[in-house]
Image (cartoon, rainbow, N blue to C red):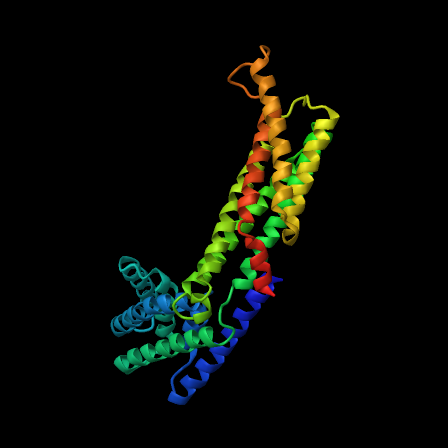
Amino acid sequence: MRSFHFNGSRIVKTGIAIFLTAIICGWFGWPPVFAVITAIVTIEPTVSDSIKKGLVRFPASAIGSAFAVLFITFFGNSPITYTLAAVATIAVCYRLNLHAGLLVATLTSVAMVEVIHDHFLIAFFIRLGTTTIGLLVSTAVNMLVFPPNYRADILRSIQSISERAGRLLEHTFHTILFEGDADLQEDREIVKGLTTEIKKTEKLIHYQRDDFSLYPWVRNREAELQMAERQLLFLHNLEFHLDALLRIPLHDLEWTPAERNTIMQAVAELADDLQHSLDYDHETHQHQLKRITDLFWENSKGVTASDAIEPTLFPPEFTILYELITIYNLVDKFFDPNSVKAGLEAEK
């Protein structure tokens, strides 16, 4: 749903920018095609990006227009003109680090070859004018129409990652404890999906912070952005330990049925915390953590006392409990100080 809303708003803004750009060019009696091309590529995910890249695209377009006029003067409308105009534009823009404007400059350069027949200098300045119109209109539309605001998307994404991680944790431990050698490949694919979602959310936070100086509501929510970044860091660490858990070589686990049930109960409580953040209870969390920690130390005594196990090799029971305790501590930090609660309530 978020993706559809995001893409839909940009489509609408692009359409409005094209319409207004064409109208303004019509008022001046200038061909709108070059302005429209500029307007299309200038609608960026953030207003800040539109401004920054616009400052690069203007000189790049000027370079493309200049080369078009230059080579038309020498060679007329011929194949070599298209070639030289495009290659020269690309080479100079690349050399001057005008990468964001390279595409629109090259398109402008080759398109001008077809439409310029005389008054080359006037045509050059008209192209600069149409480029300016496209840049200004699209930037204004991006700023005023559906202004980029990813706050709700960030909060929803963090909560979604938390819920998916909780379901994955519960399923993984149920498989390990009660299904033995079952294939965990599906769980590994889910972990990859979590990694992808975390990266997307990091990008949304970057977009939101880009507009920090342009919108007062972004500046006023700096603490909320920092909170979201901390939560995302904890979720990234959680994803790392879930992945490590899935890579533990599983043999015949020596836990008793009672110990397996104790572990599964603790995991179920942990998964419930991740899936229903408003119900998180610190005291219950600490109680379950103590039970798992006690079991961990009890298993540790068995490891050091056993002569059958190499001292440099940990049994899977030891490693699984270590990962579970680490995840417990990460979840406790994730909710401190009731950060997800604050985020959900702020979203309402």
